[in-house]
Each structure stands twice: as C-alpha cells, then as structure tokens.
Length: 305
Image (cartoon, rainbow, N blue to C red; front, side, top):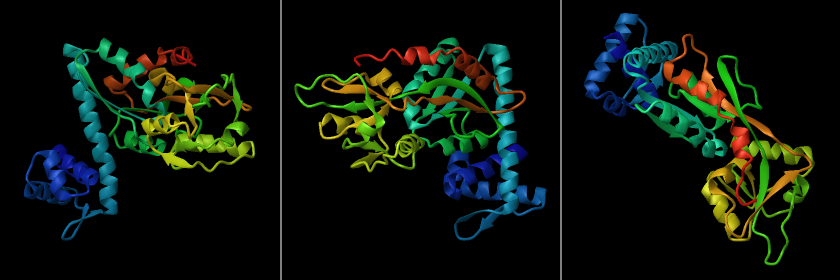
C-alpha cells in the first residue's frame, strides 16, 4: 500500500494536476486524493498544498518525493533484475539526449536491442543538458547522452563516447570550387542559421566565436535540426553543424560541409547515468555497450564531404 501511495505522490509532482495524475495511475481522482491523505496521516507531515487546484508540494512533500522516486526506482530495478535472471533482459530502457547528439543514439540502441531482443527503448532527443541531469536524478531517465565538457556532478557516472567536431554547412554559388576548410572567423561573416541560444549546442559555438573575438548574431535561430538544413538548402543561409549529423543525413546535394579550423574544436560527448549500487541491470547492459561502441571511428566516416 505504501508504494502505491508513493506512486500517487510522484505522479502528482510530475503531472502538476490531480486529474492527470489520477489518469496516469489508473485510479479515480477521489481515490488518488484519499491515498495522498492516508500517506500524510501515516507520515504525520503535510505533503500537498491544497486549494481549488493543485498548488504544489510542501517543503516536507518535496523531501518525501525524493525518497519516493528512489524507492520506486529501486523496486523497478529489483523486478528487472529478477526477470533478467529468469528469462533474460526484459523491459523498457529510457534514454534522453541533447538535440546535437540525437543522430548517434541509434549507435547504442541498435546493438542494445540486438543483444536483448525482449527489451524496448524510449528515446527523447529534444532535452537540454540540465534537463537530462534532472531527469536522471528523478529516475525519469535511465541514461542520457550529453556534453561532458561542462561539470557533471559526482553523483553521475560518465562514459566518453566521441568528440564532436564542427563543419560549416553551406550551399556555394554556382560554379564555385569546393573548400577544404574554413576558419571560425570566416564563418562568422556568413549569414547564419544557428540553434537557439539557450541550447548547450549553441552555447558551445558562442564560446568559440567569443574566444576569437567574432561574436555572431544569426539571422535565423531554431531548435530544429531539420529546420537548419532546410534554411541552408535555400542558398541564403549557412549553418555550423556537428559532424555527427552528417553520419545520418549525409551532405545534401548541392551543399558542402566544410571543416572549421583556427581553432579546431572537439567537444567531448558521453553517456551519463546516475550512480547506484547495485546499478540497474538495464543500465549496466547499456553502459557495457557504450564502453565498446567506438563511435569516433564510425563518425569520422562522413559520406559525401
């Protein structure tokens, strides 16, 4: 009964709405509210600010929420471990990635699903770096792919995957020769379409442009990879993109992907998981694959450049 009541609390915090939380738990709203009241009575602390609608958790509720998330995650990990011992790995693996790493996720999920055919994978590829860490901490994700260049707290384990390099994607004028490389300063003079400035992938680029004394003001900003490629295709804009995107998209016809130099930037990217002892069996299996992935070798084989 306690775990069920804790599920209600976690669902309410996640959904921010009593009715949606009840739906997520497959119970009626009165049943969810009654379960939360019983939990408050049992723990002897108020957990929820109550009004005509959900108004958030009390400070005590926020603390209990952390324990609830951990206990439910440990229950799920135990069930997965037992199932794996009996029948092999089974269940759903949840992976999140920053948008710039979205094209490399398949290099992990393909071998994972091949080795463990009874599993399924949920991939979220539109997360900010801070969101990934938050969702790992709250057990909403099992693993994340993000930047390792900024500080990752010690409560997380990191597995380096590859070093992200950058190219200028352009559609050169008709009859223009192919460029072998271009400097960041020269790229700054292009009419640019770049990622939204709140995204970590854009912050990396802004840092480089600031370091060389050539801050940029893009004509177009977007949070969509497809949108960036579409804008370059018009011939009016250029874009700085991770070379890993070309592993999937290739270099579209009529465009050039020109390596950026002076400086040559290589941003470390990796798999991040929450440190737990023992680690969940699904996470252990993914980490094992990540350690043997050899992504740098795969991603250097960019077609059509």
